[in-house]
Length: 258
Ligand SMILES: [Zn+2]
Image 1: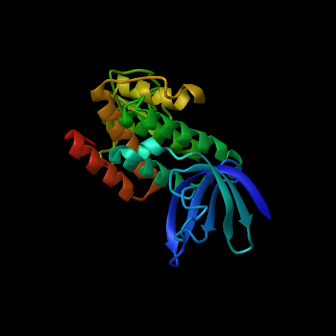
Image 2 (image 1 turned 60 degrees about the horizontal axis):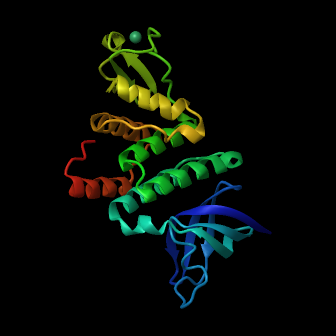
Image 3 (image 1 turned 180 degrees about the horizontal axis):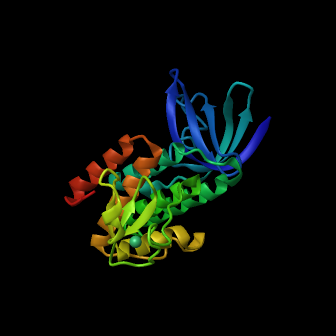
């Protein structure tokens, strides 16, 4: 059977001398693995369209044992992202994070839209890349069933406190009074009000508005710490691409504080 779907290449790995297995986040069928044959041959039709970060319309032969790519029509290569090593390393991490999440195939277009929107803003330099990273991390985990409860303090129900604490493993907010009652063995990260407001915006606003806000630099550092810890607490693996991104960012900016 041949299926046709739009999707973005999350990663690729070699098999044999000439072929690669491509992981695609597709609009209609969730995450698909498919073999792309003959990529190292001269004039390979598929060489460009099967690179990571390429968004294309793919024709895929669905076999009993494995799938293979018949053809692909490129829609967006995110070419400008590839020219900036820091942005590229962040984009690779976002793809790795997406590939590590078990997603519901019926709603894979929601994940695809989030990833495409984030990559597009990253490419166009329209938002601080660390803010894009935090928005993506918090939103994709929420979509994947790990939505934190940020409505109020989980103990006393107070909506706002100058300083609240986020419990990344428990996915809860606790106010500065109630934190006294939380055992010290439970990890808590300080979350001043601007950080809580930013997190609430990401989680609770409509999908087309989640990128429509900005925060000050100090808030961004705190937000980054929280969303990254949140990812690592729930995905239960580390990402080489994240380490790479942080290293590159630190080298260029000398101030990555997470
Ligand atoms: Zn409380």
